Image (cartoon, rainbow, N blue to C red):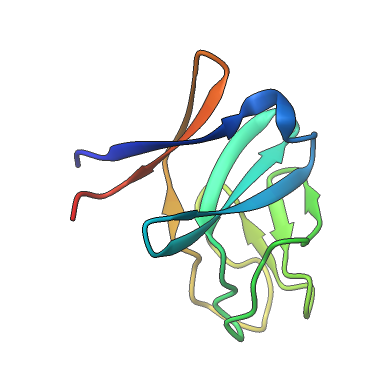
Length: 106
């Protein structure tokens, strides 16, 4: 699949094991730095549609700040009992020190 990449912020501005929500078009995307690797997921928990920004990140796992529901940042798959619906994930790359998030065309 072809993606269009949007530049979001400088990579050094996001601390290890933290996240930042960005709006790309009409979509809220949560960009996460998990131990130096960047990931992007839709900024909405599939359990109760709560924003994920502010959730704890540990070893490529993001926990929803509302109920603690854990999700694998690599795949979006849930790791708990509250939902079986994965998060929507997006490709991420760093180009010349800037984080870019890939969205499908359209």
